Length: 161
Image 1 (spheres, rainbow, N blue to C red):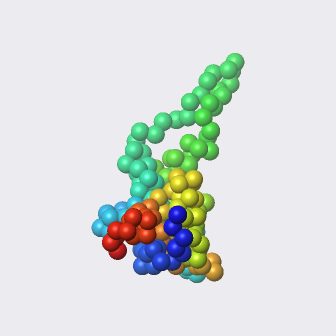
Image 2 (image 1 turned 120 degrees about the vertical axis):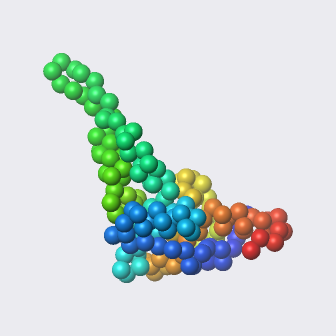
Image 3 (image 1 turned 60 degrees about the horizontal axis):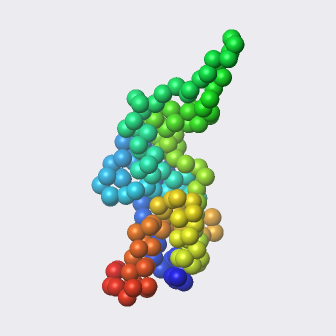
């Protein structure tokens, strides 16, 4: 169990984007920096969302989106799939700015919490990164890669930096 604080392993220089960043600029940032995602922050450095490579998949497969399944019943059409879910997929598929694409329910970490606890939350919630927030402001990013480095360094005696 890694009992080191998140602040020792997070990346305090991880790039962020603003909600009005274009999808073109986002893709360029993710591609050139080889990132899986970035935090979306407002003018006060508060995390307002997160956008990941997974979200970018909607841009690629937009033409494959299908209308929700319906079942005829008498003279009515009953939607078998949630319209809200379908509408969100379409919204992401045709996003123009980061605010159109980002996830707003963001899991975060505190810089002083133990890495073990943050890693548990990442595993439980199925996320690959956690924006690190202190006093309501973004201070860095913790990724699965940081957890692997910590395992190498602190659990297995390796020399990962």
